[in-house]
Length: 339
Length: 286
Image (tube, rainbow over all chains, first blue to last red; front, side, top):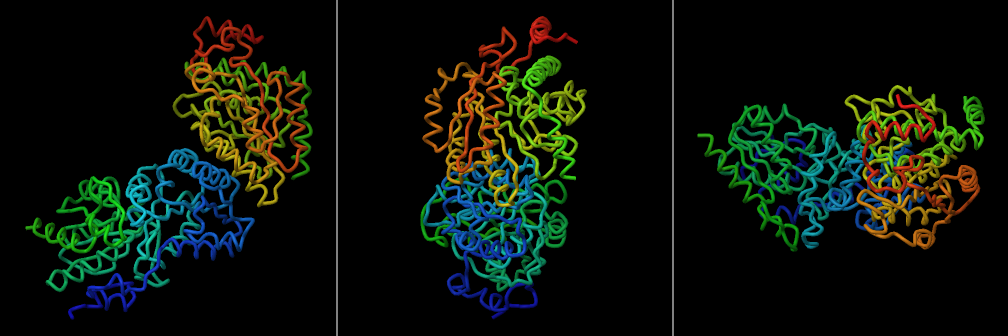
């Protein structure tokens, strides 16, 4: 049809070819990013004896049970006791170890938040928080396990580094980068499989956004599982003659301000798209930056002021307004406001 | 290098009378600091003074000139609001100049209202939010085992702090991993912020609870220096199980009008009270 491969960057060629397919999300090769994390931490351990894994009775869900099998003296299963686990991770980090605390995002960002703030971030200890089931990525599990606030909460902690990668390979690269990063890092993963968009040459750097599609009429800044939906939206809009830039903002904090402002100047309108509540996450971060530096029409796609519900992942995020039709509508609206 | 450090450690085996004298000095410093700061927690600092003295001046393998020595024993004051006793102990142990004690809770001070490991030499863990220091100690003890290091981790918890659920999460994990390189010391002074623990939220039977959680329990008089030293030395010989020393203490110990009085959990003495307290502790008001 009208796909222009040269507009796209870093995407697998087969992904670009499929972006306009109505069954893209069922056809694309997909992997839950929690499993990519588990693979990456296993690889890291081989070369770095300081890396240890802490589990909270979800090692079979995150796949860190493979780490436990291979390195029984380097994996510590704390059971269903996330508060103890997070402060213990802090204690381990004081000795020079690099603990990867693996748990669900609701518990990492909420139940154990006091420990994450006071024992990890305040003393800036080198703990990596590996949070699966982030956002509404656990569809069927329902609201208690849908961490639709985790990025907002983690972003509000002083000195925090908050990452929400779009696919498997970029999640592995983020895990490697987190191990080399000095200080706490919050890595968030999807429970459900999401399309593999990139390969291991993806230029992942903490704090650096990546432009995935060139565009001049508006910019969609997305992260985690919504990046794929943003790409699908941009391709649909391209077929209407609109040229939409798409940026992967995998690092919610620290924010890549230069790339945001460049997109604002060059495209004049921005839509943010995230699987997170609209308060305090990616959309808020971009809005704060624009308001203070270069106000332009902007709209936020994200979970509104509501809790979601159980259901198949793609159906839930569609009902709660996070998929490409919603993004397309928002893009048309911001472009209309430019005039 | 290691030999030199070992020598310094051996040099510091203070006798019981020397420890008792140092504990009085530390109590005077606590009162002085809190009076100067016009805020702080005297009651729980005074109840813990004898135990911290014994740890830092007799038991722990430490090098105040090298506070980040990898193989040092660790101490964590999980009841972090009692940090004046920690600061006074560290200052007397020459981790930093005594002049800092006058800066407690003041702007730009190395001595924060609750202890900050990044600001105060000798503070092994940032504490203040109750329940967390104990868990951090569990992490340090696990790390020591994995790294094949011989250091011992001492954690002091408060009896009010036992109301925190996370304390029991940590207790389970200490027993699971048979952490004989970690010892909890319970400063059991019977009071908490609002009033007597028995009134706010009873915690008894304390010893039975810890035994049920898989811990070896040793009960002592937390103000009897001989009992303290004996217990601290004994636990270093116990293998295969974590130990808790339940130290029965008196909140505000050493200052008659503060002893066992809920109101002295978190307030500073006035000028008259300060003079009297210093006199009772064998010192002079400055």
